[in-house]
Each structure stands twice: as structure tokens, then as C-alpha cells.
Image 1: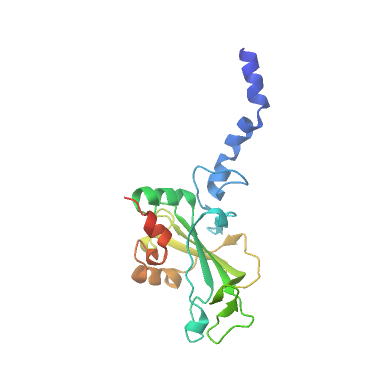
Image 2 (image 1 turned 120 degrees about the vertical axis):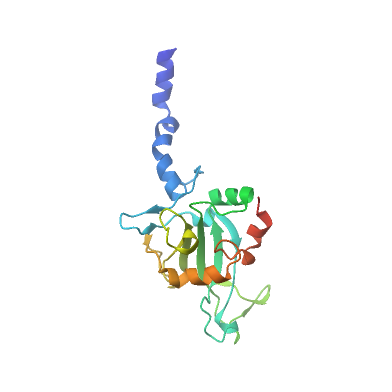
Length: 208
């Protein structure tokens, strides 16, 4: 019986490979078809964020839109923003109503369709006049970590791929200076440096 049991253990790819990949899955957000137990950011030796590869599979929380056409042509963030939170932090939020250590929030930017646009930047489409997503133009992450960012307000740091329509996202991202993002979040975001007021999915699910 002992010999048979050992043979099964050695022959099973699930048992042999599962533990070996668990750390990688936890740090990257999981491999294809695999649900990790914990979502955790990974970094290079010089402190650059390694871009998670599955943010579009995270929990969608909202889409703020502040186009140039409604802001005198000078909107600070003229793109359409699709915002997600990692699943581990989502579960923690639903239970406690707080953002856990290691929370990752992804914001993917896309340009609005511009062909045939009105003066305010809106276009007429089959569903009516409005703003409709076109090409992707950037990717950003906000990460909460009191150990890595002890001096950042709220212990949040912000990473950006830059704003460049149609350009592939880099594999790694350097943290932005605190004043580039955190000052606005500190004085205007409604919950722990996060713009909860713009994310009805988070508001509805807040636990605690």
C-alpha cells in the first residue's frame, strides 16, 4: 500500500507542480486558469513594480470620465478610466470595509472615439450621443503597503505606464513622485486616499 501511495504522489502533476508555482501565483495574481489564494505585488531589485498580467480579471469598480470637451480642452485626465481592485482586497473590503495591506487598484485608460465628434468631444452612436471607449492609452496602479512606503501619505504609492495611445505597456513601472498623485488623493478622496465617492461597486459592498 505504501509503495502504491508513493507512486501516485510522484505521478501526479498537480501535486508535483502546485506547490512549486504557489509563490509565483501569489505575487503575479495567478496563472492562466488558476485562482491564487493571495494577490501580491512583485518588484524588481531596484524597486520597480512588475506589471501584473491579469488586472482585467480583477473586480471592476467604476469608470470615471472627464473629457477635454467638458473641461475647456484642458482636462488633467481626459481619458475614460476603467478601474479594478484585486480579488483578495475585494474580499477583505467586503468583510471589513477597509483596504488591506497590499491592496492593488488598477486603472486602465482609454481614449474616447473621436471620429465625428461634437465640440464637447461626444459622438453619436447607435445607443445615442455620449462618450465611447476606443484605443487603450495607459495603465496605472495604486498600491497600499506600510512597509514599502512608510513615508507616503496613507502608505499608498502610484505607478504609471505613461499616457500613449496604442503603445504596449512596459513590463515594469517606476513609482511616481508623491506630489504627482497623492496630494490630490489626500485632500479629495473620501476613504483612505481612494475616491470611494466615484466607485458605487465599492460603496455598495463596504463591510465592517
